[in-house]
Length: 596
Image 1 (spheres, one colour):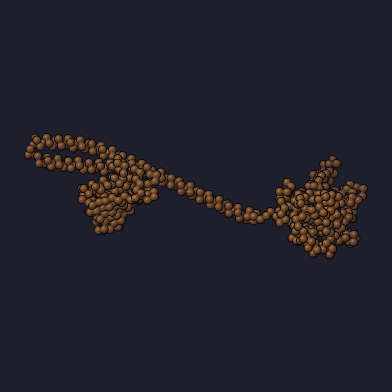
Image 2 (image 1 turned 30 degrees about the horizontal axis):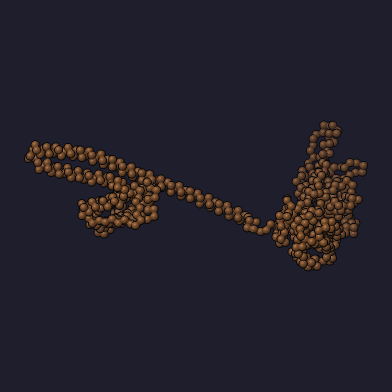
């Protein structure tokens, strides 16, 4: 944008569209609303210090990013660097200005920005020679040191704050017993001026013995810092040059000093954070860049610039890693102070690993928990099935007992009637007496068998409350009626099973012993009852004729199918071992816990 003598600012680039619309409105004509395409904002930037300085880099990056985000068609930047900390602009001005004329002659811009107090003279001369009347912003200024006479009329100024008092107050809080304050600076003009300001303000507090270490060679400075202790605080101001000449950037010198120093080092610039600065109320260069960009956006859009206090670019910052090294208490930090470099821990070092591992463990725990729940449900379902099977067996036994009673009573009545009629027939027909007597004997034998059937259908296990008692009685009958040698062994710690289990085992024993007497042709039988944990076992061994192993599955003489079904319902198992001529062994095991 250029200014013609005696005229208002002539818009260029971004201002063309607004000017065209305004002219059409003033003429009142019917000119068609032709919208000119938006042009990029063109901004010339002149930096007073080396653009490679961390502070300059942070300001420039923040300024560009903020401006680009607001520009309707983007922004174009033309940047030059003076590096006046290491070179005298007065000696270079004629040649530099000639180069700028050749470089930018005929190149219009919308805005000129100078960064740093040392850029004021150069940017004023360059603007007057190349872009007279173009809006100007002077950024990165420290208000107390700005020479007002050097600032062009109408230039907007963007200040930052060097919060020396804030940093001194921070030293007081963190090192309340310190008696010595060493102020380190270089011997460049700006270095010495800032060191003098810090020393003067520190003296007014009356807390420390102030020692200015200005312009010392780096080697000497390192030796002195190494001899310091916790009674001393170090205020590092700035170092563009030492006694030996230009130094690397201050932010590159500081790590060497911090590594050697036996005392904490404080400072004023955010670019020192993470490079050896223990703490300080520092300039936030990114915030300074954003503030400058907001002023530029307002100018380019034709709005009044926003008012921002320099304090907005300052923040308290502390390096917690150096706190631990120097034994400082983090509780002494003011509220809202930004902290960096926290002490290493499992969480800070392996946060991603911990989170992933925790997620995996949680997923495994959920899976295991789900499996345990399913297992518990299966166990509960199995227990419910066993309980139901036990109740079913008891109900079946009750029904069989009822049927046996009814059958016994009915047959008894009929047999009694038959007996009376046979007796009457014998008296009436003596010649038929032998046949009738034989019929009566058969009837009495049937009555006896029916009594045994009733006894089998209604075993004494429930009435007398003991499985061992019931089996012992059955063995006694087997001995008395069949002449088979039998015995019953009950293991130590025997626990009487619930009724359903007792009935199941008794029925298996009954069927097995019937096999001994009717099919096995055995002369001996041994029964063993034992309790192991939550299971009960019954073992029946005979010396009968036995049978082939492959015939076990289809052998009906011992009622294997019915045994297995009955025991399976109760959650147990039946095992039969037999061999021809070697007898048969039957083993039954049942869980007794929880079966009613």
